[in-house]
View 1 (tube, rainbow, N blue to C red):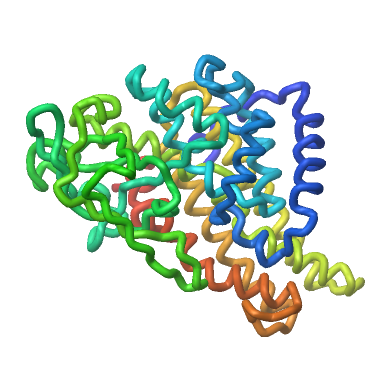
View 2: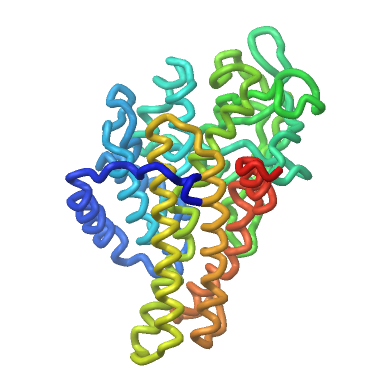
Length: 384
């Protein structure tokens, strides 16, 4: 582990404490009436108005060049804002994907036209993206993609289906991962990424209700959809290298270990009313230690990204370890406090417990299944 993560986190910024205090003050006011059961939704909670307010304060696109609406701040400044938003359970889903990975991908390999079109609107908190990666029957095996963009005069005709596409029904754009050349046997060759305006004719978006009763997942069907040649992001046929680099943004952030924070905070609040409970003190101490280690690893990956490196291995490790941590919290809570989870309960602890308990199975699926991640880790360590 030491050799794999033998690099520094982003350097401490002199104004990071002031920034953290500023964000906390904003959240204390903005989320004053936000109950724990809603805070438990965190980065799956959608509020266009909240994202716009963050954009007005310069807390989206923080590290981007000013010419595209960014603020040229450090990776640590961005990390500070991300941590505070997630720890508070803020509804960040509207801008999250745009800021976290779609915008950075376009900034890195997009055309000037693409950058001018979407980046300033993302920075303002007014442009939302979804990710067109997963497909029916293929799980986390991206190389098995069957959605095809067939070259035609002036562009492509796209046919296929994407699934588990978070907030597609409220997004403006999708970055579509699809095959443009060759056949399925080529696996990692001949795949590309395309910028898709979701108002384009031929696109059908259908909601998928999840275990919690929410409808943020979607199935997106492309039926002979025409996209111009200018839709290609980066290099045609180089989609595999681009998407694996993009996944480092998706898999390494604090959302990979802070998703259960609303329940953890409620649990600690309950236990603080039981002085002398030695077992609870040991458990909370262990969770705190795990959280500090995950935070250090995640911040280190942020440092790699800032230096332009591709931390696919390290990001996969953060995501895998983070999912284990997040998924353990409901069981730990159950072992310490007897409570029947109930989404409709008036009592906030029971409702928050239910919301997190129903959500945790997804934590080791979204962003790549545990099996896929451990395969990446094994190959990176030379064990496979």
